[in-house]
Amino acid sequence: MAVYNPKSLKAEEFINDGEILETIAYAEANKNNVALIDEILEKARPKKDGNGLVCNGLTHREASVLLACEIPEKIEEIYKIAEEIKLAFYGNRIVMFAPLYLSNYCVNGCVYCPYHFKNKHITRKKLTQEEVKAEVIALQDMGHKRLAIEAGEDPVNNPLEYILECIKTIYSINHKNGAIRRVNVNIAATTVEDYRKLKEAGIGTYILFQETYNKESYLKLHPTGPKHDYDYHTEAMDRAMEGGIDDVGLGVLFGLETYKYEFAGLIMHAEHLESVHGVGPHTISVPRLKRADDIDPDEFDNSLADDKFEKIIACIRLAVPYTGMIISTRENEKVRERVLRLGISQISGGSRTSVGGYTEEERPHDSEQFDVSDQRTLDEVVKWLMDNGHIPSFCTACYREGRTGDRFMSFCKSGQILNFCHPNALMTLAEYLVDYASVETKKTGFALIEKELEKIPRERTKEIAKEHIEDIKNSNARDFRF
Figure 1: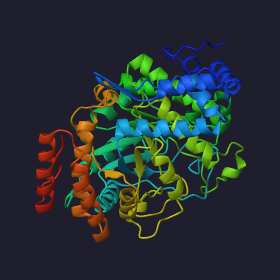
Figure 2: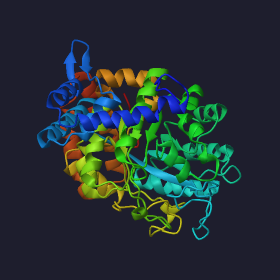
Figure 3: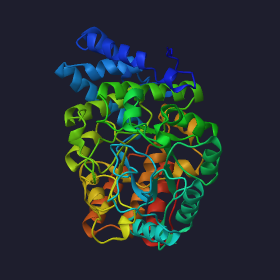
């Protein structure tokens, strides 16, 4: 029987079933232990010392106790601390991105995804480089600067060479004042050598959803195809880091397994990366199972109510305080509004989850991976964020200034990242407002920028940011960054 060891490179040792089951039992036994809960909450609370921000995070056991807690006033305290941590690390900024689906050809048999090999009535499509260019121009015309590219696993139709060619095409396109400045990649687990090639292509974050950490469930949910190999999939992030990719993004598909099991596994994976590589996950995504072509989420008996979903997000924020947290247009406006305050720092806007969807006037359904719940335009999402006190940020500066991996984490964990991110967010928002925004959004945005500029603590930084914003307003000068 495998023994739990966070420093191991074997999947069944760093994501250990016995440890997860013991953790869930421990959390259940202590869910109303007020003294222990208070001790955990105090550990999680952000503090400042002579060196800046101190935020210890929580172990998977500690975080699981909070997730199991049923005391209403303690749950409110969890939410309050989650909001404090979010503001301490990320301020009121929300990073904007869009997914770009390159191909839905797939050889896997995943039972929860409409791209599965046996689905014969979904329209299969793979973008040519000309079509990639058209999609990117459509995204640039919305105002996007950051993409997450997605493709099914198919070594014939979607080999790595195709992905690399698409990345090169995306970065090459400068349309009007538009440019994609960061390409994150969400593709199947691969080899160290392939990860090296992705790194050389200039990707931002490598994202791979575990789907479920329960090995028994995983094997049933992935009955055929290369993705059936649980160990190879679960150990992918270690290979990615060995290949030089220092920003990786974790995630599970909530609804496939019991949420307490997935939560413990997710935090254990973050602990593993931190203990082995000295760098935890750059991002954690929290997708929920949604209706799609031939997929009915009601067929899975682990569906997750909104209140539990919100609590999971808050507890992840307490456990892994430094990580970026991503929520997609799988979730509706109401849910997204609530969780933005509990820890989410990145959201998609104006998304289409179909291959070639951005060049279509109406959102096509015949090749979607999942149903989009938030169907607002990017402009509507940007205005909504600002109306709710957030700064929509199109910033990609850290990646291009070399603030990645352990360098990014050292800035982030000490709270210094705010010195870069706040002015960068305001300058990229100004770009969006000048180039793409509606009249009403523009008016709201520049009023917000004026107010937020005064919050920049360093006078010289504030003056430079103001000068750059004036340059953006009055010329085609773009891409200023600290």
